[in-house]
Image (cartoon, rainbow, N blue to C red; front, top):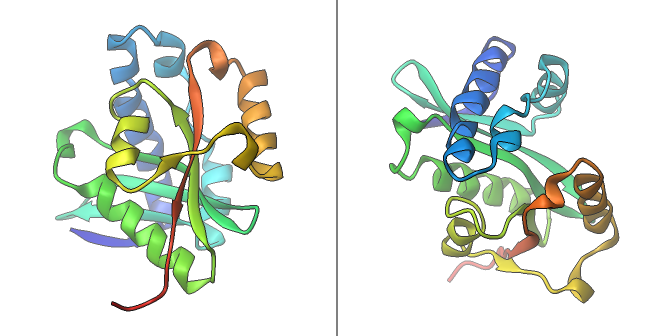
Amino acid sequence: MLIRTARPSDLARLQEIERVAGRAFRDIGMPEVADDEPLSIEVLAGYAEAGRAWVAVAGDVVAAYLIVDLVDGNVHIEQVSVDPRYGHRGIGRSLIEHAAAFAMEIGAAALTLTTFAEVPWNAPYYRRCGFVVLDENAITPELRALREHEGAAGLDRWPRVCMRRPLTSEIA
């Protein structure tokens, strides 16, 4: 599995991955999430141009992607999606590890994300990847603003959490 920076020619495929990956939400009673439109080509292009969008390529097919923001000095996973046809192969985890390496490269102390607390491929999965749920007092200002924005967009219909994975640049 090759992980590389997303290219302009990949962006429509990223939208397609988001749509097919999102369908699983319909099966667990979250059709609004399943029907949510992916980020626009323009927004995805901004991530790619900034060097904050990566794809996992299987053969010649983009199988998954991850985009990040910089939030409170940490690398914040904005979105990670895997085409279900390539699921359960460790691709999402590989992309997260790639983001962790990027974060260490730029001197960030942690990876962060916001996610659904009870969706099996969300918070429970991220716990297995080394993330911990932040208690209310540990949520940093920009991360709190992101959560407020998500709430205003209606995502708080289902329990959501902020999560953090500390990083270290020490070599054992």
